[in-house]
Length: 140
Length: 307
Image (tube, rainbow over all chains, first blue to last red; front, side, top):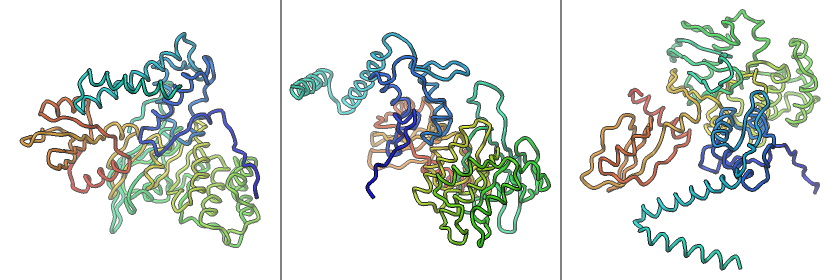
């Protein structure tokens, strides 16, 4: 039978958990919320599912989601009001600042790998410039 | 164990065992201590024969401990406390349904014993588990039988679920269905699940607290994150003359030429700098899976060394 398989959509189906991903589950949740906020899919003030709702939906422990929400709150990405649940923070420049932090993390990783391989500062700068040129070409 | 992540109010225990001992001819439970907070999922992991089932039976009042105290839902458990069991749901694979009867017959039977039986929820569960009331128990597959028993327990809304290896022997789809229902249960912060399994990945995923049991003893008890934060594997390069510094909680070391892999059970922030100070160059600090942590804990416990 070739019917259309209807997937029951829930309000948190924009988050997925991958057991193939070696990172802790709470980090996966944090990263995906941040990415959705950064690209504008979750505008400021958007209601987030309650901790228990999201835990049940993703089939991960309540404590995992609690930790993710706590850290998102600490990073200023979401705001939690007692008894009212969590919403995406309403803060100017939030989207840009998430992307900025992400960029810095990636650069840090690249630099520490470079150091491990014994690359000098000039060499690393040259390599970044190289990659930049290449992506410009691809872009055209 | 303490699990004080809930800032809101005092934590309430759904179940606790304090210094529980039970001696059998060839097996002994020694000083079992652990507690399950209300509204959480607690996972019990242990090899076969570790004492998981006995521990759960004691908590259900099915087995009398030789010593120690046991409470469930705030009341001391004794085999006579039938009223407390209205709110407890217990599942074990060796439980039997009446083979010649249908699932529907069993539903009516349980319904007559438990006033909190929920017809709507029961029919939702039938649907979600892909079960049919008219099915005769004799003809059910293992997975269907497990789901049927869980339906009979879940539909009466127990506050505490004690499930002994509920996902054992289930195919991936049935396992998914069962875990989905269990997580739906704790959407209600008033309900608690204690369950055992030896599928570490599944336990890691859905449990708020995890207790390792081996040879009749609790060998470690913590949250999944705490286990994963504490246990780390450090890969490093070191000069030939390098001697491993004496670091507490270093559990295992393996070396190949100048490449060393150190496993820590209590990884601290200071460890990398201590290693660097000894002349080593750290290549990577890796997390471990709960399964690796469990196996290391069991093996270490069996060697007789202490944490």
